[in-house]
Length: 144
Image 1 (cartoon, rainbow, N blue to C red):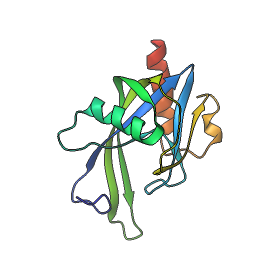
Image 2 (image 1 turned 180 degrees about the horizontal axis):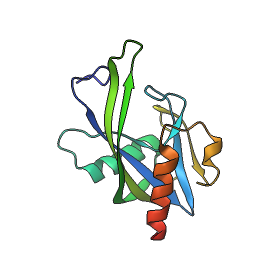
Image 3 (image 1 turned 90 degrees about the horizontal axis):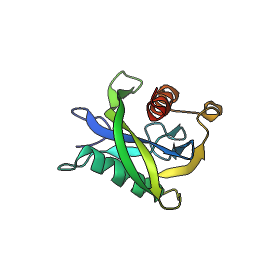
Image 4 (image 1 turned 90 degrees about the vertical axis):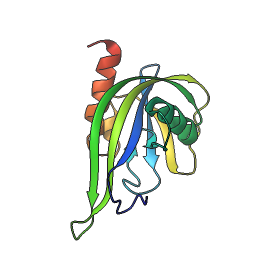
């Protein structure tokens, strides 16, 4: 199934990875949301479990291993073209995760990766709704 103009929504995962109080953000290198900062993630492969997909996507995009925790949020990301046709439609399950090992290195499908203090990440151009999901994840991690 094509990601652009799909016949149905694509199931995807995202990882809110925390290390020493900072959150991992990646700058999208492809559409949708090219150039915006988000969390690592991507489409789930057929036969792949959700947590397995989270760990794989973080490893592929950032070169690190993570421990995958609980679901933080489920969001729709629907992008339409100028004619109102659905160009992209993802249903994204965002998981809380923690850094386990590895050195951060951006892969070819992202144009940057960095650890950011959640209190200052608003200074970056973020994907829609990201700040709220990260805040919720940080609160879950703290037990709030």
